[in-house]
Image (cartoon, rainbow, N blue to C red; front, side, top):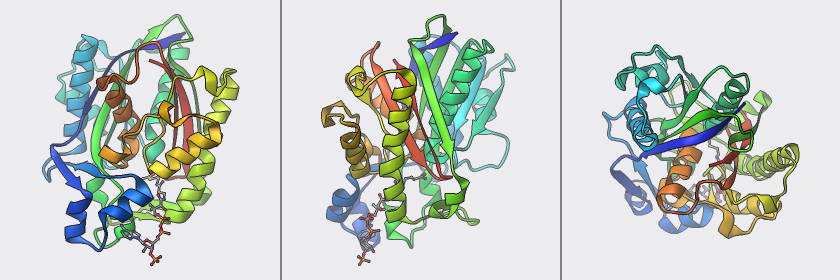
Length: 312
Ligand code: ACO
């Protein structure tokens, strides 16, 4: 039992924060941010706009794109680490907001920037077991809520937004979520974590070194596991943390740069929403086409890392 992608949707808050906007409030420059990260702008949610608000809009857009209603979904998994409330889950709230009447299960996963790969991993398992027919995955984050404004080395890196993907069960194992691998190493907790007062704390250079190793490692592992090579892959959509990490990973894997989807310049790092937003962006801009094979590696706090192979 496999799956196929039947719909996608995304939401980016209206407010755009450029590098020049940061220049006005802290000791930084457009030149430094572009050179070190590739980021030019990011979207920031309004003060009264929540993770659930953004996730609900992305979800409704994905349902409209698939031509189905919320009651056709029999499982919702939301990847988020920036939810305003400890409980209930964002997933349960989204089902309520969408007016679901079918009592379908809904839960959140917390895998930081790899969260959407963890969500896809769960979905693949449920499809393989034949337990669900239509699963929606949402990645939604309000990272701006967790910014430490006194730390210029992390403040400029993050953005807000939400993306949603809907998969339906299929008898083909060559479409939809074909394969996933996820890993964690809690021993590296100190490198990148949330603080008790809800801020981001990161050792940037150490995180960078790990990311440029673990992203290609996860990508290689999944290609080997699936019995394919880089030549079989149409696009690589890496977690959008830093353009230099993306380019270095692609180089190590032997991928030409024109096979990479890049959104980090426009969205910055939206953590658990990043890859899902990037798929929606790539469809909306006519870059990826149905039937193409996407290699989808990610890395984040935990440490967590992993990859998915998706035929869209
Ligand atoms: N503007 C200007 N200067 C800055 C800024 C800024 N915003 N931030 C740091 N600097 C300065 C530092 O103070 C330092 O100055 P010094 O040399 O006088 O001490 C200098 O720039 C170099 O600092 P580094 O931290 O060594 O810069 P680096 O080249 O490593 O880039 C960066 C920093 C962009 C954070 C990089 O390390 C990085 O991308 N790391 C990985 C981040 C990541 O991948 N996170 C992923 C997961 S996120 C998640 O899971 C939630």
